[in-house]
Image 1 (cartoon, one colour):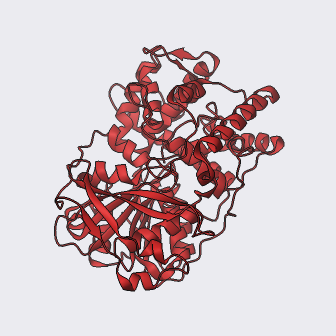
Image 2 (cartoon, rainbow, N blue to C red):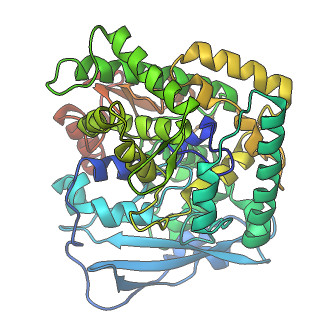
Length: 521
């Protein structure tokens, strides 16, 4: 989940603050080294279906579960494949789409495959495994598992949602809407409607079939084609929602499942946004308290004073947008996006301090760079992913949203109470979906899990994107699950926290040892 303004609503972050890729972004900000692939077979390899797995395929899906998948060398030492799935599971004999996957072969004696989703919706698991296999995962896990990252349907390489050119995305991000006025709201709705029509025209019918339930069904086909009887899975952020959805649909197929940075599937979009607004406000205060203890902090006084200085900066840019060194105009929405992007990882707080220091003396270029990282915009002006579009499209299918004017106005007032610093920028999420060409297909409800395999759920006390209480709620809904809590700052825990979390997850994934419920690290 990366902080980013949505192109259809650049003044307001709203649900955009939940968008894809924060885990990868946090690693970029922290300057982590990348992996060169590890031990890989040379040449192509064909994975033939296990007859026992094919025999257990859902009715009408035998051909997908029995497909032979060719893994070919790619990406400097990895292997890549395309897996065919139905576009519409209600019409398995109809059109098909392909899911792009990348594999980092185990570095020891392989026992199974670990499928990985880094979040979003809209983040690329393909890119995550390519970039992080050698730094994010422990040696015992790398020895035991083939790591497979995949782009869910609608994402990047897997029938991607396509809406705008890079230049159009730049222009949309630069727009400012006064959504608390009738004229501003009408202008935003008109632009959103036009962009939704572009998405429908350029993406085609797959746009209405990229909901999370469909992706969870894809996940079971992925499990089958890597020849695992049980799904071994690591999901971060939105990936926990995908994982818990899978567990409810295929309870008997769950193997070792880790859900880190948990989403609560029972809450509405408005409750989700409110929870995040409060959590980001808490994260800002934690950052300010830390900054005030460091040399070079541009803030001064008490924590309340420091937070107010940030609010004053946002207000000043809201009144008068500023020009960055590259000539681009930076509005308040971009500034706020740059502010919250480093809050996903406390290792990135020094980058925020540097950007704030410059912005408070008039230079917003570093804040713009942080906002660009959150939007997947590269330094040459191109966008490296479609995660913003996929995020919006998937959420419009997964969540009914309050989109009437009175309801959105009332939500704005609640959000500004929840988060005096950022609430204004979280409001009006419903404008994204009111004219979306496809209606939502899901009603939020508690997840139900009847499987025998225990699931591990992880929460972080200072998580700004998935508040820690959501992890406790998901653990309760799953029933057969164990809750780990990291007392730390930032989004998610495994791979960036401490040995207590790392050892507990490694022991579970490698040895099947379930950590004691309610363990606090």
